[in-house]
Image (cartoon, rainbow, N blue to C red; front, side, top):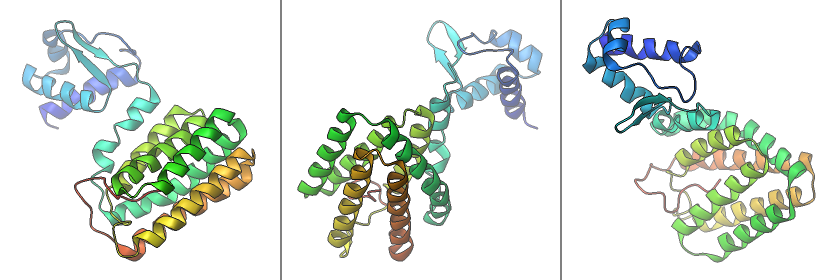
Length: 236
C-alpha cells in the first residue's frame, strides 16, 4: 500500500468509526502524519481526495474539517466517476434508474402540492414551445428535478440528478429522428404530470418507469456519440 493510500484509508477509518464526526476539525498535519506513519505530502494528497468526495472541507486559515456528511452531498460526488462511464455502462445503470424514478414519481404523486403541479405543467409548456435544444434539455432537467424535490428525499434526488447528468451528454434530439422522438418525450411528460396531479401513485410510477425505459431503448437503437456540450441532450 502506498503512503497516499495509507493516509487516505487511515483518515477514512477515523471518520467511518466516528472518531472524527461531522463538523470536527481533523488533527494538525504533524500529529496526524505521525499517527498514520506518513509524511505531509501523502497526507495532503489524501485530504485532497477526500475533499473531492465531499467528505472533508479545507478552510483557509482555519484547518480541515469533516463535512456535515449529508447523504445527498456524498451521493453527489458519484458524478466524478459516473460521468466516465461509456454508453454501454450507462445503459446498465438505467435498470436502477427505472426503479428509482418510479419510486420518486409515486412519492411525488402522494405528496404533491398545487404549486408542484403548476410548476410541472409550466415546464412542460415551455418544453413544447421552445425550438432551442439546449433550452429544452435544461427545462427537462428542471422538470424531473421538481418531481424528485416533491418526493421529499434529498438523497434520492441527488442520486437521480447524477444519473441524469450523464445521460444528458448524449445527443438524440439533434438526430434526423429527433423531432418525432421529442414529441413522444413531451407526451410522456404530460402523462407523468397528469398522474401526479391526480394523486395517483401507481399511475405515476408506471409512467415514470415507461418514460425511462423508452429513453433506454432510444439510446440502444441510436447509440449516439457523447458530446462536449449538453445542448440537445437526452431529455429523460
